[in-house]
Length: 119
Image (cartoon, rainbow, N blue to C red; front, side):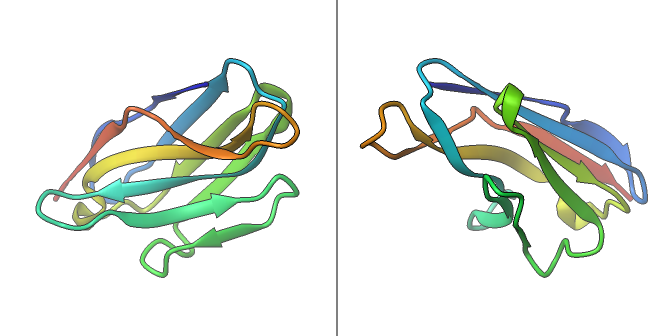
């Protein structure tokens, strides 16, 4: 299973970016998908998650600014980031809880995409 992210980059404070993460390979089903981030010198932080049914959860630091969504037919999760702040600068990693066969479940990770917000 591979997760490929796209959409990172450099943006000014107040701007927006949309991250995408597509899962491919031998996939029977995908449970939760989501995004973590890690800023330089800081621990990784859970940003947002979304279940297969569409229930979402967000870190307090991004509530009201970020939106997570998914396209189950495309095995893809998105993170719409609005009103970006310099403190959102980090490497963003997507993950997915994947069953490759009905009785298995494992977490897979993307390679990371860099988001830089300038003040």
